[in-house]
Length: 131
Image (cartoon, rainbow, N blue to C red; front, side, top):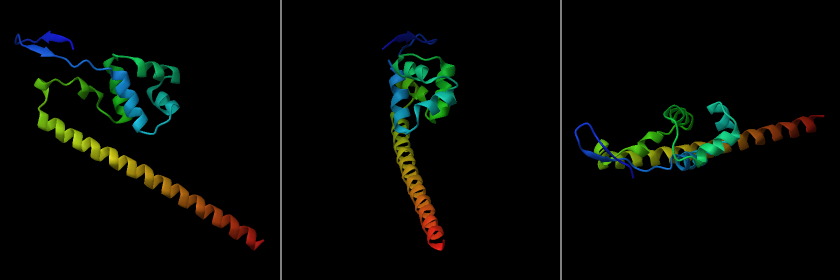
């Protein structure tokens, strides 16, 4: 972990983050297509694969990725001095609730899709029987 000297002559340790791995983990949890992520970032799929392998990313790119994946990747760089433990626990609990809500939404979308497909098939059967 890199250590720097702050303005107040205090030593501060910056977490060593493999940010590309974090981006890949969040991307995979979103059940999103790689091509869709690439399109939303304004790049090609090969560049997204490169992002997944990087240790460091430009802050502008990391901001865009955070917006597209709806995840604050900058929080991985927080130090103990910049955030208390209770706030982090609350954040993690909220993050877990959000992830569960996303999974439930995905599940409900699948149910809606299946019910629409069933309705379409029933309509096709009715049309054929009417002929």
